[in-house]
Length: 78
Image 1: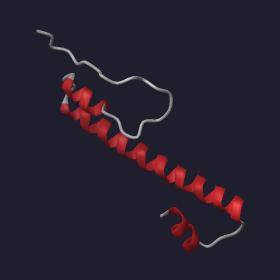
Image 2 (image 1 turned 135 degrees about the vertical axis):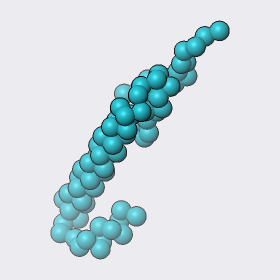
Image 3 (image 1 turned 90 degrees about the vertical axis):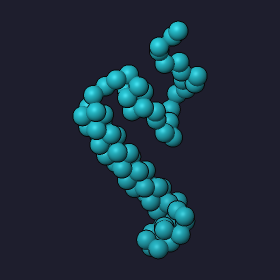
Image 4 (image 1 turned 45 degrees about the vertical axis):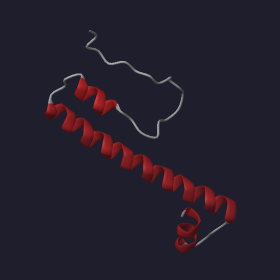
C-alpha cells in the first residue's frame, strides 16, 4: 500500500487560477499553526494581486480611452 500523494496534473508556466498548496501541506502533516499563517499570507497576496491587476486595468483603459470617470470604469469592468 502506498501512503503518498499522487499528483495528476501537468505543470505549466504562468499563474494558477487557484492553488491546492495548503491542502497538500495539510495532507503532508504540517502543524495547524503553520497552515493558519500560510493561509493568512496567501489571502493577503491574493488581495494585493487583485488590487494590482485592477490598477493596471484602469491605467490601460485610461491610456486607450483617455480620461474616463470611475462610473464608466466600473461599467466596463463588470
